[in-house]
Amino acid sequence: MTLSTKSFEIFCGTGGVGKTTLATARALSLSQSGKRVLLVTIDPARRLKDLLGLSENAIGEVVPVTIENTELHALLMSPEKTIGRMAAKYQTPDLADNRIVQILSKPYGGMNEILSMVEVQMQFDSGKFDVVVLDTPPGAHFLDFLESLGKIRSFFDQNFIEIFNYLGQKSAKAGKKLFSFNIINRVVSSGVRKLLGYLQNVTGAQFIDDFIEAIQIIYRSRDAFLKGLSLQDKLKSKAECNWFLVTSVEQGKAEEAVEMRSHASHFIHQDHFLVLNKCLEQDLANWNPEANTLSTVKDSLIQKEQDLKQQLQEVFPVVLEFPEIISLSPAEHIRQLTQKWTTYGSRS
Ligand SMILES: Nc1ncnc2c1ncn2[C@@H]1O[C@H](COP(=O)(O)OP(=O)(O)OP(=O)(O)O)[C@@H](O)[C@H]1O
Ligand SMILES: [Mg+2]
Image (cartoon, rainbow, N blue to C red; front, side):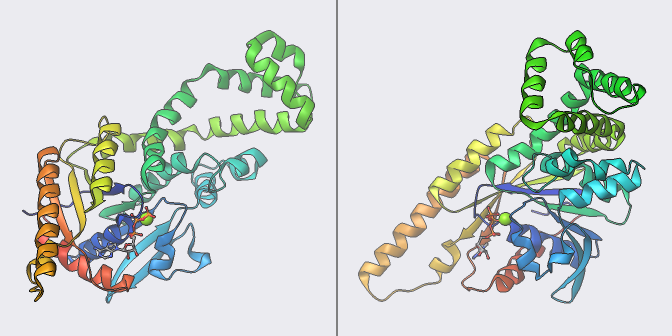
């Protein structure tokens, strides 16, 4: 079969199955075929940084990398850097200055997924790349990434933002930043009131001011966030996105892949690919053990792998197989897996 190349190519799957390595190899194979490729990792664990030999300074920046004499670009997501770029692009400098926004945009601060969407959209809009290859964090974190779109929408739909806006204007007019509890008493439901009252006792009024200001600032930057939402339709579209759900050849991992697809089924379109990594069958077939016992081991391993493949082929529309690379060197893994991607071709 020949794979067609799409504007977005997403690698997802559970832990340690080879997402980052396969995404890198795919990006390299596409670059070799003449595409302008941006390889993005939204995984805060950043194994890609080590794999590509990038320095700390590269984090959050689009940097050129050369692998096997081929140049492509890579971006290790940094929410803080994304906030900075949004502030510059949408001329909302206070977005980068507010203390609460700064906390939220730490790597595990809760905005990682939303900002990843915004960043990917901004990079694609730059017109510099034909393909964005996305390496995602394992399992549940990846599902958070998908859910972030819903979060953006509900955040901006909430009336409470209007309320905070109103409060902010009131306190600005009063010539002081401190909010008035009287206003809160009038407009905010008792649950939120209790919470804010509690927070004020614990943190002091300054925190509440920063908090209200953060909501307002984020609201003023809503165009940038909402732009991130338009990515949702692209990712759901067969014409614009290839989904690669990665698993390795192990019963447990394969079951996790089936489960993950069912969790994300409203998002991943029907023409996705299951990438079955670390297959042993071919190497085993070429192996001629002398001892009988080893022969039995060989046959049973092959049988087990064939059974698993058959099970998966019943569940997934297309299964792409990648071999186990017998080497300890990640660079060698990338080199050989890139060759394998090339055999699958890339139609535009
Ligand atoms: N086909 C392969 N053959 C042999 N080793 C492989 C193969 N694919 C990946 N590896 C190795 O397996 C290890 C895990 O790979 P990788 O980091 O790409 O997985 P991952 O799914 O991104 O992990 P995580 O969930 O932690 O992000 C790495 O050491 C990698 O070099
Ligand atoms: Mg990874």
